[in-house]
Image (cartoon, rainbow, N blue to C red):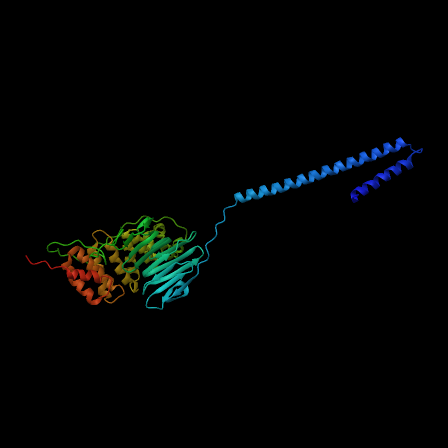
Length: 442
């Protein structure tokens, strides 16, 4: 059977024979016809050979193209990063409270607030605890504890991290179980880690403090004390659950100076040349810097603008921020100067009472400053006997008096404290002081 392509080739061959016959000068013989047919066949064979060659090159080109595509795909696959699925977005619900504007949580249950997350994490705020939700996204959550106690049970999930702001401290979490307590008045931070690993950054160290399972971190900023233990210590006297060494014999009478004793004007470094108006623009960001833990930046700004000029021109809010940054960096002279400047320049502001109390805190952090601190607490109690810091001022006075004068000297203050604040932070220490035996007269 002849295919269509073969038929067309045969027709072209007959056409050639016809042309040879028509163009010949004489009738061709048998030999001439045989030669003509052989020539036609040769031409046809050459055409078929060329077509087969083109077909082979076409197939080879296609194979090369396909191979190149496969190689390119393989190289791209090798270069491309391995696919890591993103963690799902965090969903949560609030029990025992409601979310207010700004992320603040308001308690609506006597048992406290519960945050329950879709991946199994949960956070419990003790009754009376004030906290905020900073942000929640697929990368994790950022929360803040302004006051009180909270417990965390955070699931460990690859690619997800949690942050907890607790006063001036920042806790970085990657799947763990822990509880944290912050007392902003007493400036006392406590973290108990039951399981996992956390890092804590804050004013007590320029480097992060890494904690492992079973460790407990207690920081008393006012006394510049940091303690890491692997088991809870027994309660004693010295801080709300600290210790005081036992006193032997009759204690010495402490000298309680006036609050303004021994306040000499320090010498500050000279002012550097800032851009015009730069000091005011930088100070406007001090509150934000402080919230983010950039205390050194605040101190550098004050020195760049000149300490004396800053003390004379800064707002009352900025003076308090400067004082706190200086306290956290243990620069007691600058902290004292900022608070005194606030009292001097804004005498009618209610915040001068807070400055009086904080001056006691500053003196407490200085070696040998306990008598001066007691004097500041006395001034606060005289000016604001029922003020918001009265319980803390009286409690600190009691503890300092026990430190420098012994339990007998501090017992009357303990009696007053329990009478006025029976459930206060220092009630346990006051009871322990009352239980101390009175030494017999010689």
